Amino acid sequence: MNRLTTSWGAFELARFPEDPRDTLRAWDAADEYLLRHLHGIDGAAPVALTGSVAVVGDRWGALVTSLAGHHPVVQITDSYLGQQATRANLARSGIDAGAVRLLSVRDTPPERVDVLLVRVPKSLALLEDQLHRLAPAVHADTVVVGAGMVSEIHTSTLKLFERILGPTRTSLAAKKARLIFCTPDVGLPRVPSPWPLRYELPPDTGAALAGRTVTNHAGIFCAERLDIGTRFFLRHLPTGRAAEHVVDLGCGNGVVGTAAALADPDVRVTFTDESFSAVASAEATFRDNVPAGKAEFVVGDGLSALADGSADLVLNNPPFHSHRATTDTTARRMFADARRVLRPGGELWVVGNRHLGYHVRLRRLFGNCDVVAGDPKFVVMRAVRSR
Image (cartoon, rainbow, N blue to C red; front, side, top):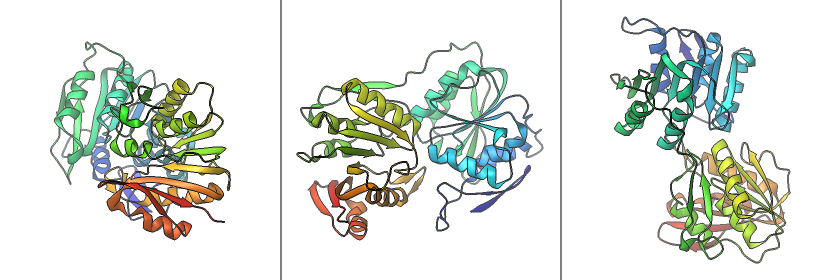
């Protein structure tokens, strides 16, 4: 946990789930730069935080926690973990939870926004989708400010603001962060978001899946195409196992869990992800392809919603990034979660980049790990819970 000092007070902030060993802060230089700008820097007048304030993409709640006194404040995020971090940080700071309205990117956005603050996401598609969804709420006097690290703001980022909302310019860089200033042009046509995107699966995904349609909401990993790791996984999924309950952990668009359901119509599949957009994508993909199938769809923290010993098979393609940080923290938590929810004899199947060395962690947790398949880039591994 670290202390963020702002013009509105000092706040003890942490990521979620809180881990005392975690050295990553719950904010970065872009958040600090945006907060300084709002208060007024270099002789500039402060931004009038009156009316409805909407904060898009606030990663761990640092922005809305700092600005909660200017309610009504709305946070819009695609991250369940970010939303939970916000709740915890507000409570830790003694702020009434009602001071901030927490919305997911799948919820209906506010009807009117007077101050729009955008923390630029890694996904350009997610930014495009959110700007389209919020454009009808923006009026000529809306203050629009974006923030991101220099490495996150590209010409394409600025073009999106310009095309959807209005004329756009950037600030000078400070501590490798930059701000985006956009002047709303209410004369621009308000067109619907192009997302979600649907496409047919290619032949190399197997006979059961080839030609079937998947749905991808904006922001999920490789939303415009099926990533090569998942393609490799689909070619080597377990077959012939009597599994009653299969879990697609970190489900993304749900194609892996859908493949399991197509292989065995009697199986029950739980799709879970911390991304609201991912779970919405998985549900659409599954319903389109297995309309009579048995499934549940959970937005949450890994497998925290599942009981111990309740699953026969867990399928997992873990992420190795948390925003801009490269880390195996999420993968380690996923593996430990999987061991907990598997019954004795249940199996965890994982696909990962060969260089990540997941087999070491799996052997430590499960006492065993077999390499089922591999190529120069990826490996598929199987670990069995023995007791």
